Image (cartoon, rainbow, N blue to C red; front, side, top):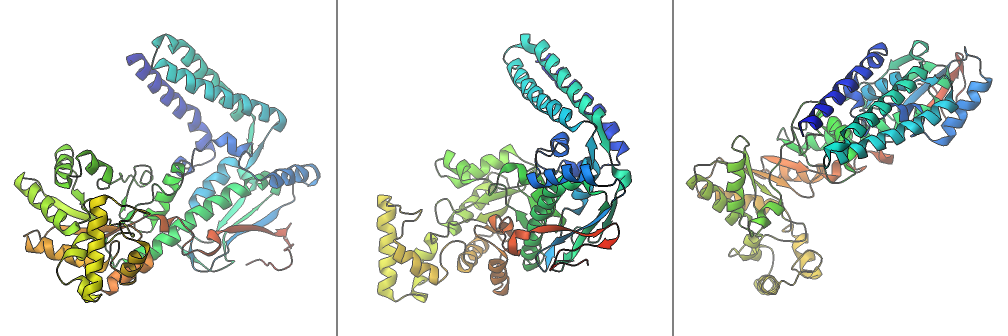
Length: 479
């Protein structure tokens, strides 16, 4: 195993050395490149991620255009009021990938070989874990992979000396509809194939930052956790977290989301941990506190569907064991109503006639006892609708108020309340307008959906000048 660790160290050092010269020559900030999922420089340069029509356009222009032919390209956002993000990343991608291979056909063959060697090296390295006799083959495969990469590097002709980039808007700036964020002036053949790449980066990062700005703005300075680690493919986490943290999200869920800003992931416990303790939230929370004594304890208290009761039990149990409970998190499903709301005397009667309230309680008790669960709820669709109309399902204002009352009455006034589950800017605004005693918000899927950005935050790039003369298509103009 020691030999394997040495091999990994050698690989890391070689990788740094082999990439250092290229990046320094092109004045590239490699930290920004790491935000692009599975960044493979040669895959970008060989147009693996580029729409075919850009590739063919590049080939045609390379054949017929004079080297001195220069286009001005403006990159703009389609949505008014979007918060632009990704400009710094795009600048570095352009620096890295603008240019051409000396022999593009040969480079394509070499790239395919390079990809095969990467796969081979990975397989050899995994086999080494089981049999150190494969060490030699793993080292040999790695050497061949590095040599293939060096050969591709040697064929690359960068064209940064032929480009001018005007940054019109910085990350975090709010842009008007059709307003350019970047203008690029250079021979088109050197960057035609990059359009799919840089427009996609800008669209994704801008969508996340615009959504985040809206949500954070409604939270009145209370901490917002970027809880969007499981609503899209995991490789987008670094870029998404970068965009969210640029607009004052205070916590992220994963290390990848906070990598650029050196912020470790911070989160509570999942329901799965409580389940492994047979549903005993207090025991699960104590185990967490003992295992991670330097991490502020945030207990998830909706497992038994009685947040007030569970929150007090956890707080008292930790006190007895000389541990401190910092936060409780309420995450009641939107298809459920908390048991305390249902069963506490007179609460339902504030919203329903006594007979109807009794029927709701009876349905809950019967279905709970028989484990009659339909569509993630133990209420009928009709009852769910009634409760939802009165805003008594999920994490609702009344539930938070009741939990706060229970904690205070038990002498746990310092324990803060953190809420999650279906929160977006509108729901947060409702909570804040009602002065609901919430201390922090967890927000997930609404930060990744095109919630506050029309057209999914799309960007478009237009050539607006050719050799200094206007060449806009009808209906577009240079800004």
